[in-house]
Image (cartoon, rainbow over the protein chains, first blue to last red):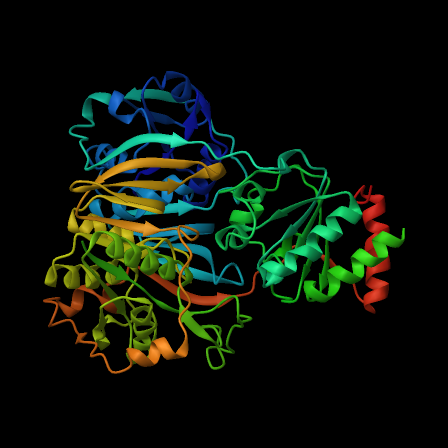
Length: 318
Length: 262
């Protein structure tokens, strides 16, 4: 079995939740694997020592050029240090999407992303599970790892593993030339909106099922009757029907209400990733196969355009 | 600026309930509505806007069969000048790396400053743009939601966690994967598609692209889908049944008990 590596996300000395999820994923590849964590950045001793509480070996790559995780720069550091047939795990987030595909080409290894489960390895085939068509169906996928692999794992699907303490190995001197044709400039923080949905106890959240901008009125009427705030999923913001500050999801806001009403929202993992604190989730969707019904507490199969006005009327009568 | 936009014909998940066929090896495709991958539409719109402002031309390209021609024509009706169809039996069963290798062959036949893809498509790998860039040794940025041209380079915004935007400078030529929401793709009517109905769309195969047929297609694929299945759902939602009135009564009781109605 080739050596397994996990690329660790961290900020301000703290490890991202995915850091130990990747260890769990590695154990599914090989229960006895001695996994090497890779920590890149500038001034990463805290992150390295935290990673070394769970990982057998931690590769520290400390360099000013790595201070912001620019995927093009990190990729160079990795191809200069990784062995040819490495199995590299990383989170399938906005950084992993930036890094993984190109890294697999430069390592001449296989690439699979948004992996939701790993069933093990048979010979040189890694048995993976993915979802396709916006989560409506799952697929068994065979990945030929004979020349190594880059595996991007969906955040939040593996339960963080408990590892054993290991040691930090300083690889900073081996990263070589990391100059890149893409330069990081700055991060622009998202603008604040008229409503802070991160503080709402009850959210009426609307998705593609609303069909038309003019129909949003019925959502606001329901929210008003309930004393709730209105949030939404990505397509509503893409269409410019509601402001970005109302978007729930990994690329929007992380909310922690008591009650979350998903109205005409299919429930992509990026959307669900923005809902924390285990709220009571009510889903209304006309598609009985919508993935939202797998995660909701209560579901109603209905067209929200008909259902919402009737619900509003009843709530108003209370 | 000469811009190449890579597009894909996909089942429209907003319009279809995806069902698995009886063999479990594919989805039921007979009655599916197909359209251009949603992300690609934003990529084409962005390319057209860049060319409108800064000059140049837009070419749309796809790997597919003759049915994929309709998505090329649709994107040409939006304003792309040229379309190229990459069609060869040898391409069938390609994984992401194979598709990127085919596209690389086509890129090298042209002279493009900028190559755009959608950030992801129906299978959700989000891989072809990054692979293509690495094969070409071009710089790459994914999930791009802002492009501002400069001298020999672009200022690009990437959508990152929390709705924040990561700003980068990237040298040309480069490959960018485009995130939805970067613009508002124009509407294309039947009339627009009729206008481009007779424009010639050249088709290229493995030999035209100088590709060894063994380097693409099913034989070369390292990542293969074995079957589709419906996962066991755990508990899943308790589905409320009955008349709409009964459902609403139950829902209101639940909302009251969970603090959902103030």
